[in-house]
Length: 406
Image: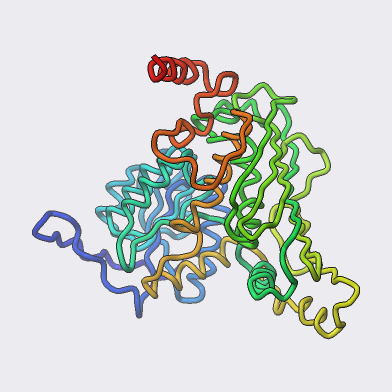
């Protein structure tokens, strides 16, 4: 890791809040990792270490409720400060960036604490369990330069997705017409034997939320805003609160129609996006991450060969990764600009997933922008729907409905 930083200035303003952090130009960005499990160790630390080698970052602290685990993590990684208390770490270390690698139910509280301490946030998906939580976080962000909270959607980043996004945005492939988004994975009964899995309160949702969100987010990043969704969900194998499979039909604002399939019942695992445009089909086939070789572009018969060759030139291969996204986030921090995958841009996939659940559980078509304060799905992805919500939530929702109609 980078040479440990000196302790930051913790001078308080007249109002008792921490003084603003020094400008981010001309120095390394001080980062702290919250949650030292597999994703913190295998993805966030790896990305931060790579950027430390480029002179961009240094990890000054790590936080975890397991004291032995966080001490071992810091000792192995050369991180100078180990904490079990997030608030204490924020007060004492004043990081510029906090990366959150904890379960979704903790994301809102921890993100808000970091933002209030003046730190930018990079939070693992799923971002938060509900749109209400997301909007509460956005209300805590800074104005005109940050700090901002962004979500880890690393599949958006890398050379191939950047190239295809540009081709679509410029209209080189013609108008998008038909799309398919598939996350068909396999999780056995042992996976769901872990007590927090398959439960709304702790996992946040089923495969639509916890597994398919990456491909759905990438599809939205490529095609732009969606306008309406019609969904179905089922529990076909596993004894869980959430679904184990979902399907949806999605209409986009540009007129394109898409099918979406999210499953944990599929032994032949694959992640796939296919977009048929007027002049070409572009397809991505992979599992947990992609590089240039995972993309294909098939032209219509009348497209000139020279144009096809240009389409197929993805440039130097930069695979999708946490590192690719973090590199762009650091650039946004230094520029005082809202990063991609934050604010409205970071909310879009969560809104689509919420609408998918509402559509599936109410047997209705749900339009973009329809779910807001006062809608039961705004505050809980199960919406209190009988047969889907935990028993107590369904009872409360039913009582509220009865009172409203009395």
